[in-house]
Image 1 (cartoon, rainbow, N blue to C red):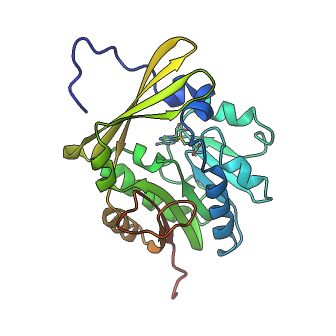
Image 2: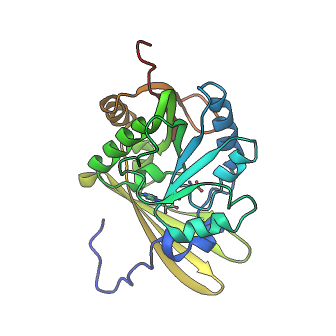
Length: 259
Ligand SMILES: C[S@@+](CC[C@H](N)C(=O)[O-])C[C@H]1O[C@@H](n2cnc3c(N)ncnc32)[C@H](O)[C@@H]1O
């Protein structure tokens, strides 16, 4: 992270605590929910029957849409404020959600329970150390049924590096706008997104720190957790992963014993 200068106003509270009621407008991708849901529905057909688990379920943007197709979805999130938004939506009281850290070990009922564990919208990268990311892989693997899948999305580090320093509009809900600047910090493999938001005439500043990892590092963490890569696409729409991809969705499977 760049050293704070004495003139810098401190960023406001974390988006998940302070701005949960605005998350869907400000931070959720304007497009993309449908593609994510379709991708998950198609994966769910390829695995043994069982519930899905969303790590960082947030306001339920994805999980509620998946559940509307008749699948059982559970969630974990550390922010009661985000989960309160989910609860306020139609069907939001029907989803079992634990408040807690998704990198932590599974509860007593969870091992071997889920057909698909997924984590979307850059949320995996919100774990800012390698140790936390590895623990997340290991604990996701423990939660899976044999033959079950762990799915995550992530930026390609090379793509992050080329846009570092640029400022771009990311959302324009009504008369307000959201601008984002990204900086990259290789020493810790961090990238930092600073959002400046015009909210009803008032400027707000939200900072989120992420840890990037190459696909190769992710695959190694997966292998250490007993998972193997099944599929990597260039995004939730299922496009081919190629040299020009800026993003990827990686699907890991827990092999069936002897499989
Ligand atoms: C970027 S939001 C994504 C929400 C939702 N998955 C979506 O795509 O709309 C990330 C969510 O993960 C939660 N989160 C971040 N780190 C977490 C952790 N270590 N344990 C549990 N929840 C976490 C935040 O509270 C937030 O609700």
